[in-house]
Amino acid sequence: MQWTELIVFSALFLLVTVMGFVAAKWQKGDTLDHLDEWGLGGRKFGSWITWFLVGGDLYTAYTFVAVPALMFGAGATGFFALPYTVILYPIVFLPLVRMWSVSRVHGYVTPADFVKGRYGSHWLALLIAITGIFATMPYIALQLVGLEAVLRSMGLNGSGILGHAPLFVAFVILAVYTYQSGLRAPALIAFVKDILIYIVILVAIVYLPAKFGGWGEIFNDADAKFKATPAPGDGILLNANNQLQYATLALGSALALFIYPHSLTGILASRGRNVIKRNMVALPAYSLVLGLLALLGYVAISAGTKPIVNQATGRPDTNTIVPELFGNNFPSWFAGIAFAAIGIGALVPAAIMSIAAANLWTRNVYKEYLKKNATPAEEAKQAKLASLVVKFGAVAFIVFIDPQFSIDLQLIGGVIILQTLPAVAIALYTRWFHVWGLVAGWFAGMAYGMYLLYLIPSADGSRKHFGSSALALEKLSIFGWNPFEGSKMAIYVGIPALTMNLLVAVAITLIAKKAKVFNGTDQTDPSDYHVDEDSPRVKPVATH
Image (cartoon, rainbow, N blue to C red; front, top):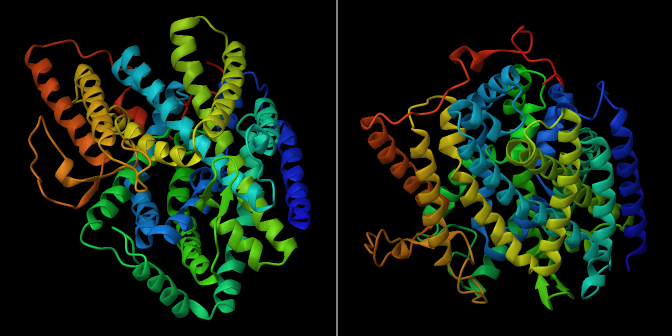
């Protein structure tokens, strides 16, 4: 047991717990019994709060343990996270301000609210809501993977259900203060999380390379390791077979990120369009840190770091690489700060994700199908309860499913959420698609994506199906036709699945328009997409 690290970690964890409860009174509105206040923080966060909130939401504990672990295990492929977060912000800059404006005019809380308003179809909205909830669950589970990696490195590495006890305690605390304070809790805690992360990374990228002979030596050590253990796709450079996968995974991830409900929650909580624009310009600063962080995977190779054996599964847990690197090479007190940064980095996104999933359940399932005349207070109560269920569902993922599999589930989650892009992102610009085209496209893209994912075995051979999101082109079949037979190049499954979605949506739309099938009622007006915070058309907070 690493007592110094554990004490420092516990002290900082206690600090953010107190902040979580205090947050209920921070920037307080008239009531927390309304989704605008509980689920969106009163829709009044300024540039700094939004920067920390959205940054804390997108750059998660999983990012901080998994990206370097991927670099440690596979090399250059792990760097896909860098171009992905670089191209992300120019792609989403304009759609997000449009989504903010139309949501403020009509009081939309979730992306499914927007879809229902745009197409007048509660069935399409239901599909979007269910997709968002299911894609978010494994994402929350992955935050626990990051938190557990830190706990194991401090010596809390038991077997069986008892081995997960510290995780239960952490998540009970998280659940209670999120229940009480809503989105204000992760918004306030994000300040502490990000300050700690920046301190740790800046120290790590100066101190550790100096300790191991500089970056040149570190790259040489990594190159020697990959050459000594040749495997498909490994190496400090990309090869001919994984370049397409690298590019499509970066593009697919960028297209998917801001249609995840938790990403949009941070945007809808912003005060105005200028806040969002400033953040889209400033958030790439996190990508710089992410690139430096990824290189710690190579530092771990040079340092001879070994992953801890997970007592629950009996296998080495590569997610412990960064915590072990810090624990072995930093003074105990600073390692405790580093562990706290990663642990708190799990709480912020987990809270936002559970709130976003709860908002979807409450607005687009409970209020739509179970209790149409629910009052705002009843909606808020339902969302609070749903956020608890989602959190403990994520804990169940970790306890009953191999955590390594939950990482694959998150990649599958990206393929799933991409199927909502036509109905959510494209609909912000045009209503050309027919509602039944969007529904048919969703089913086609989802079915094709799941079929392709089913064909992929895991890299270690432990599973024959759903083992990864990278598909060899030779397996890409269209009704039995293999256009790329014999090709070993890999592609991210999300891209062919989204292509199938769009092709079917276009075909059904053309047929429906030819047959003059009714295309629902659009509640929005073209001018709604340009309204800013000072407009009289903005719906007052907590009044609908």
